[in-house]
Length: 173
Image (tube, rainbow, N blue to C red; front, side):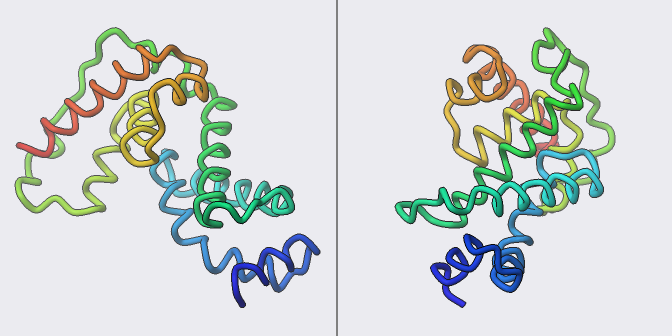
């Protein structure tokens, strides 16, 4: 089934097309969810809600961009909504200073793989982790991040800088 056929079927609420869309993009979107969520269960919930949002909004998809990019944006926004609803950002984005411990990662050395990096990113406070994911991985500007999270552009830059410094310390151990 082509993307156009999948989209057309999803607009018509055809279960086969919805399954095809889910099967095609669910693994990549789970990776997105895992970067923002603290547990596998939370990531699964966010992904499920993200795909519900995709199916509800599929008729607004404009083929000017990639279908995957459009789905990713909805899933990221769903993850951010989940973070805001659980109030995980309260107190963590405006942190003046934080003590982050490095002892759990002293064994990594040169053999840092994707799973280890994901584990390190997960160890960041929610504010640091969220801003890092949005800027470094998703490519949003600090102004866009500020608008999305209800923080200032300067706060976004500060959170990103602190997250990056921590990750650099861990990786260079």
